Length: 353
Ligand code: KG4
Ligand code: ZN
Image (cartoon, rainbow, N blue to C red; front, top):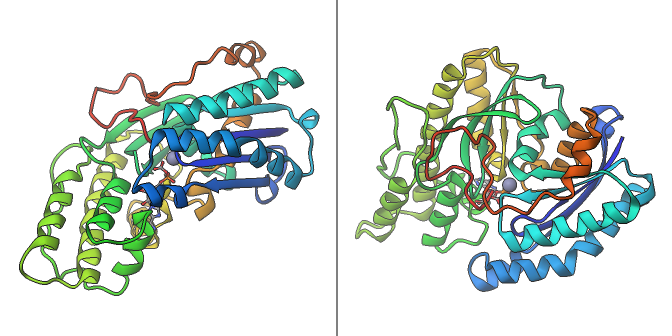
């Protein structure tokens, strides 16, 4: 079962071909990602119009390359999947319109994929993870725990009431004059610092409930950076990272309890999952809880086309032709929470994933 996946909801233009009928390690036939970080650096952050224009330029060459590397043509595909939200609307329109046109022209099923569902199902692309499992989604726009009960069946357990954790890494990096994206830069610097050198509050530590909060920590870091006491940058980075993850692990541990389901695993997705220190802390939490921990490889933690192709394959496998047909009418959406029944919170279905 061959599916092409297209992702363009933020600053990556990505396309991939996945063959869902192959064994796990041979499923990804190609995974092409064009990242706009150079342009982003020039403007000091994502400028939606600039991002949309770059997607227009890159969507065709990136897709052509993904098909070529996989050694397949559009006629060979069983389905074409694209992110239709949530995300920066310009990019979502570019990618989903392109994919719909391709599907219409080739008479193939089109699958409208929620970007967050792409992240949520990625562990099943790289590992044998049956439902239900607990997902920790940590990226630049999201910070939430979700109970994944099945394809299209998600229950949000906790979410951030203000900033996402990736955003906290990016803002900390910016305050310290580090390069973007901030996460990897902070992780590298932190490796040389003292975790305990700078006193910072652990957000929400010990507080009941499962929600996250990172804006207070951001303010505390700013104070530490701007204070008269001259902290070494590596110590600020290390202390920030320790405190941010202490909070994240505390809240995730509570989510495991709150999930109230026979979990097969604890899985992590989103750009922050690339962090090695976090990965080690999650492994320790898994051991403590007797839970298998799945951390997808780096290239599948950050935004990519393979996760969209895989989510498309999971939906195609369920066999609902009328659904595929109707998907052509799916409108691009800037906001689209995975769990529409979740109580409202500022972090729900935010525009950036
Ligand atoms: O899922 P993702 O690629 O895209 C969106 O958020 O849209 O996640 C990107 C985020 C950024 O905030 C970046 O700083 C963070 O993931 N990130 C990391 C690391 N690598 C990427 N944060 C902490 N440690 C890392 N090694
Ligand atoms: Zn993402």
